[in-house]
Length: 254
Image 1: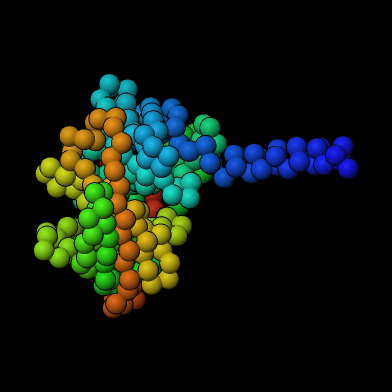
Image 2 (image 1 turned 180 degrees about the vertical axis):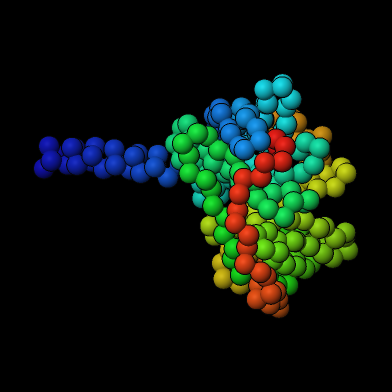
């Protein structure tokens, strides 16, 4: 019996290891040669924590751009700071293949960057426009509540967070698979929220930082949010058919 069990257990271990690799459990760390219609860049991703990453883009000109990302279900939501704010998502297919999608507050369309011979990461358009009751805890564990408003605008979303006894925040978002990727930026601060869509509930992980922190390599504590739909907005019915998505030729490197 022991002679039979040993090879069976070993075989099961190999299969589980292969499955873990296929699902991308190794995470995103690595160096990637990223290409888009308008630029080429080297992207270095460094792990800060089990689900948090530091991103550094270097263009051929030598210019560098910094970002932070968080991972859920082998999908990374991220932002990048240059002269503007880019909200991004990445999926890794193997050690050398990475595909990303991004938007900015000033652009209606989507931008893409990816390694060569890699499938373009597709976006989704979940019907989630509405007003939500919001509860959460910040990175220090302090609870808060408020309202979240999500409005669809063709390929993207406009987002508004109204926090009780605090400020309102205005941001942008887009969908990938079962996730709504959201972000905002002000003169001094940036924020990222990665919501998992569960019918009428949005389950979020949040990251808020000062702009000066983004260039550092220290882990930034995260918080949580949950948003429950209280009023459906029917603007999805009014949204025109999305224009054909093309990699924009006038976009600059994140």
